[in-house]
Image 1 (cartoon, rainbow, N blue to C red):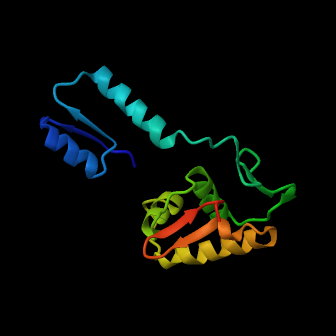
Image 2 (cartoon, rainbow, N blue to C red; image 1 turned 45 degrees about the horizontal axis):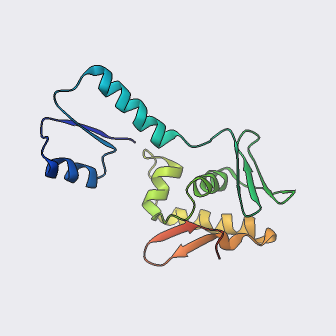
Length: 153
């Protein structure tokens, strides 16, 4: 969920602390309604601007979001719905490490209460789905941190 902090505290240390705490934007009073609406739109573009209707391709693995299909080369990869969402998230955020809790928030959603180990089960299923195409090592375990999607093996 994008967060915009609206506050009267405008010192540099306050702004830096807010941004480092994870807010997406920091707006100091006084501000106009037009400025706030423009900032909301900008934050929404940044946080939801992924190409959800296009084709994503990384090292021969192709995901067609409009057709809801995954291809390895020219072959269709049969994939379950949760593994599809997990792969879509990884392919739109490659090379970045995500913890189990971050993956739960991004893939399952913030209002779902499941155990963090559920992520491990679906990571395993995703790897098994990609294994016949020799792409299972694209989903990498980063010890003590989480998981990363990378075609640089």
